[in-house]
View 1 (cartoon, rainbow, N blue to C red):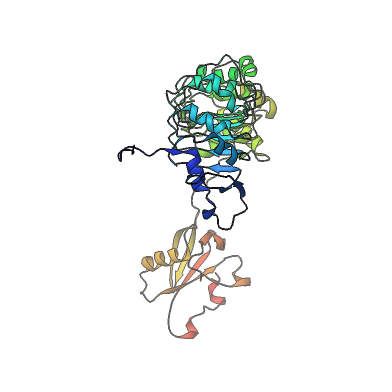
View 2 (tube, rainbow, N blue to C red; view 1 turned 60 degrees about the vertical axis):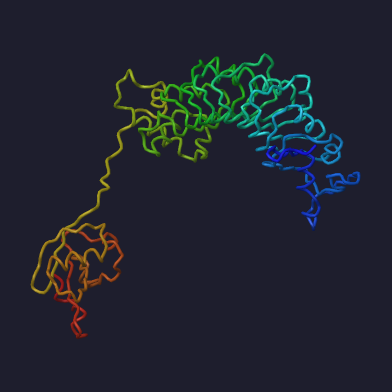
Length: 441
């Protein structure tokens, strides 16, 4: 019976594998191992394939497994498998594939439609060798997640991003092997949900919560030490944290050394530089902040900045960290105010017999000065030459022509009372260079 033309074609794992790794596509082998498979006449499976130990079969429309014996023969040496962006929606088919790959370490099932499809516990033992599992945007249920973690005793990394979770269903069986949980871009808001990860994954070292709306870190020191005794890295980028008390509570994680907290409401009023300083001053154990190593001397500079930033605040508003830092550095005097506005000076501009006192911005260039003086003195458009005369040193060095149009005036060390000599450009060579004697006053 022929398949209807409007019916979607079914692709199996074995079929796609055979077509993608057909030796005709690898005329030179490219260092990839050869798998030999005797196949009956007319079989769609090739009799030999060039198969790497890392298989990437993403976006191939796979919805079925195919023959178990073919998978077992082809994939005896495979350790990583990427099946993302396919049409797998039956855990039975997935289990058939996984059960015939004996050394599978990494499995990526992202973007497969697994929402509302439950994994039967009796089938889950086939995942026991997997150490890294990616379930991004699968909308897999928490029950299935817990079934997987109960049957993967060596699982170290779990990726659950983009699954629309707004609550966390707690498992009664912890997964002590898990070290990294990435659960970004979900809808978690309450810390009461986040704290469940500590109960389920007691050895968790890295927790990535970016792009959730988590609005607080709401536990005591004793509770956080008990729930997250091994947490070394936490990512709270684009979360909803809005109070400094939540930043202070990060110090309650006993082994925390890396924090990411960019894009949170708390830090919006501050400049980029002040955000880092204020965060760093309140996180004394952190050595990696927002992806950057804390440089030598940076911590002390930040802590001193923190004291000065808050020293005029009312006593009742000062955080505990402020008093700790004051006991370390003492009460600091405010930094001297430095005027960084463009510097100006007043010089005498001499053009022939005419002398005028002119205020110059030393940030402008020689070209800017020429334009200004040409307009001020109403000189002809055929151009002028400028000479700088240092009042104190003119008898030694004489006048210095300002030749470089792009050079800033401050680089000449011009000071009040010095002189700028304006010489209109003329054709006669004898009048091009001013004599030294008459220029000193």
